[in-house]
Length: 158
Image 1: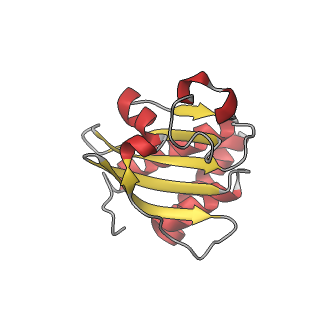
Image 2: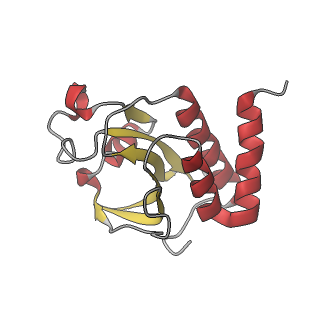
Image 3: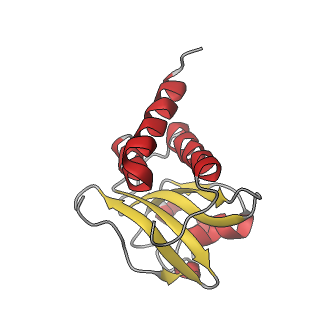
């Protein structure tokens, strides 16, 4: 069956083949209202940026490394599964999180190496609250699977 999701997956695979990890991240961001899309690697207590896309500043390709605990990716790391919310000010799970007043919308999924070990996350986020769709999460999960199959893991330099 040719579903919208299968068409988006094929387009994601093409974006990855043509533009590498960065091209795929830019493509993913084009399908969502989120301002930012990023891939991070967990490095002990530090969250290291692999690649980053800001739809308002498309030439910026990275952001600063931060403590994992200062990021919503901590929830992906600690649960080993997807994590999302549309409005940080209304979600009790992030009530005490240090980014609550700044990053108000987030959806992220784990990244696994070829052995199935989690090494990072891929996520969309925004400074404004808004809807998180299953389509957003499905495509992040498809990107995670694609990275696992094609790369088996990423280094910060990629």
